[in-house]
Length: 490
Image 1 (spheres, helix red, strand yellow):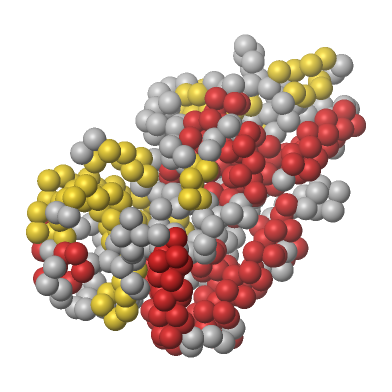
Image 2 (image 1 turned 180 degrees about the vertical axis):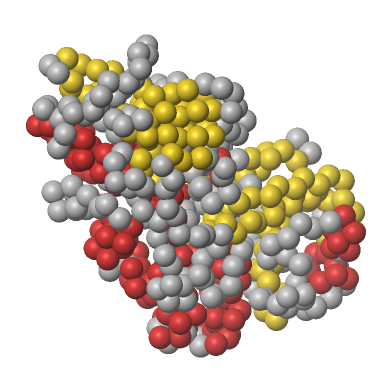
């Protein structure tokens, strides 16, 4: 996503004539729609009011990005970014702003979990109680499940909880009011201010060992969580791992109708021009403004450009060249199958014995990271979702499933491949007004993390442009009033 503000530098030469000088967003990732929301609704310019205008360019067909959905046998399911933490205040604010309802996470406390080692289940929670069960029976079932988990993992569960809560307390500093929260020019500054930087320099395993977790908890429970949420092992960096563990806590929620409604709703709320099917191929500095060229032959002249999609696998030409540290993206292959699992593949006699969520250990001969039930139609018919690090071919799927009536495959460049110590790309790519939101993604990848990064970039743009404008006081006053209203509601 690239953004340009219609806010001229007093000393910059005028660009070629255009109908408008654009505020432009190159939108390829849903989570960064928050950047647009954080920008003020209007700007004062030379005594007059200049309406904000945001043409956005997007290469994908739908306005959803990582929250895209797929259709399987007439039912629609989310392929990624399907949960939101209860302390994700920006996401909660956006849902309230758009009038979207919450629904509890379907894979909550009552989910039936099994940990598979490639031949058998090393641990399983209790199967869920029948739907007709009374509240007392359900509470007893929940208590027995908790005792079962505690018997296997012991005090490590409490230590893991403390580790996650400590991270969340530090992360909550990003919601402080603007009067006490700086504007950050680098990711390192953001993380050091919240005392989170150290977590990005060591592996999750190292952090958890220091926190007192035993080896069984790390190799089983924590490994399952990181493989489900990031498709990676406990060797990921500590902050990404802590965010992953937070994604397994209770109280998780999603937007009723799908988290994609955050994307479509914010676009509509922005009242901006959206260019679907248009891909930016080059960004050039024209001394005072940027020229963005698309694959369709269009050009856009922009005062400020914000890139809010990972550059790691894109072929955008920059003139002059920008320097980025090498970073690989972790591809998650998501396979949706309607059919019935083969119990023999899991070392069982009946498909009814297979848990609704199958997590796996970090073993090379296990072909998938996780397998979960999305919807049950009958005892012999359900829709499943599998995450894997490599494609699952038909031959393998025919071993895992006894019957398949429909199969849908998606290859996601889902998040960075985390490796401590993490090195961060600049937020300001050229020392001028070319910004990169996804540099923060090397710390952690989540809807809320991206919203926090996007808000900071929006504040950074206003702060730096205000210093160049003769109307700086007007801009700062407006931003303060609008932004503080948001944070009071949060």
